[in-house]
Image 1 (cartoon, rainbow, N blue to C red):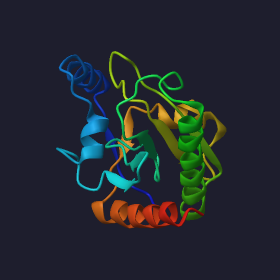
Image 2: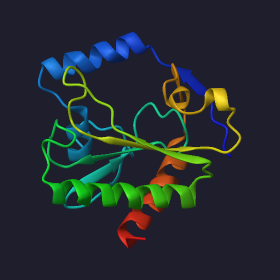
Image 3: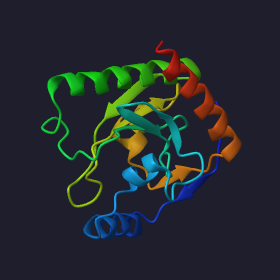
Image 4: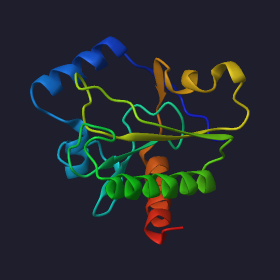
Length: 170
């Protein structure tokens, strides 16, 4: 497993920025999908329905997010059953790709968000590496006040491999 340095995140400042952006009508997920003002390498994969992204504060290596291309705010209410199932198929495909590419003891998949912060529906797909003590697993693994500082070339290599696996429809 790669060891990367951790950077402390000012969570209060981060939350304030998300809420201010939301009040101003800005959506960082839409921006990442549209690649406007996006962090270099954030967009991993895109098809006609969704995009796979790297968050800018990854708590674990291989941490990704999958979001519909259209700005939707209701995790189930804003989708037909067919559209929702199509997104879940892509989450399954992404999960399979991550488990094949990153050592994974357990794969976490969850949807966070808030109408007061990040309203755009998205799912976090996160590989928990083997050997993490139980006390640091589950919510503790992703609710850290710090994140990994992953070199751009490592992210780019992983992004290329994830995109290839998603395109293959493994």
